[in-house]
Length: 211
Ligand SMILES: [Zn+2]
Image (cartoon, rainbow, N blue to C red):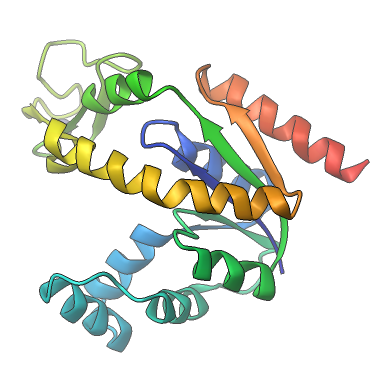
C-alpha cells in the first residue's frame, strides 16, 4: 500500500495539507490522534486498552499504535496519508517495512510564527466551530458567527501546553528527519505561506516523483 507522511511543527498546517492531499488522491487520511479518540469513544477492546494506558499516565506503546492502525484501515482506498505518525524511530521502521512510502513531507516553519498561529486559535464553547484571529477571525470579538456562543482557547493551545508540545516535537523530530533523509524520501516544504501555496509546493514534489 502506498503512503505519504506529513510531519511538522504545530501550527504548520500539516493536518489541513494531509486532508487536502488525501481527498485529491482518494487516499485514506489517517490522523493518529483521531484514531485513538475514535477507538476510545466506541469503547472497542483497543480503545479500552488505550484508555487504561492514559489513565496510568503512560504513553501508548508502539505495538498498540500499530494494532490501532491495522484495525483502522478501510478498503477501497488507493493509499494512505499519515498525519501524526510516525513519532518514534521504531514507528518509522515499521512504516517503511509495511508500506511503500512515496514521500515524507516535512513542513518547516519558524517557531515564533508557529506559536503565533497556535495562540490565535479559538473554538466556540457551544458549537465547536474553529476560528483563528489571524486567518479566520469572527465578525464580532469573542462571539461565534454561527451560533453566538462564546469563543475560548483550547487547553492544548494555552502557552504552557504549547511549550510542552514544542519540546516533545523537537525531541522526536531530529531522529525522524535523519532516518527519512537517509532513505532519500524526505521533502522539506516551506510552510510560511498560504494553504494554497503550501499545497502547490507539495503537488510539485509529487509531480516530480511521477516523471
Ligand atoms: Zn458556535
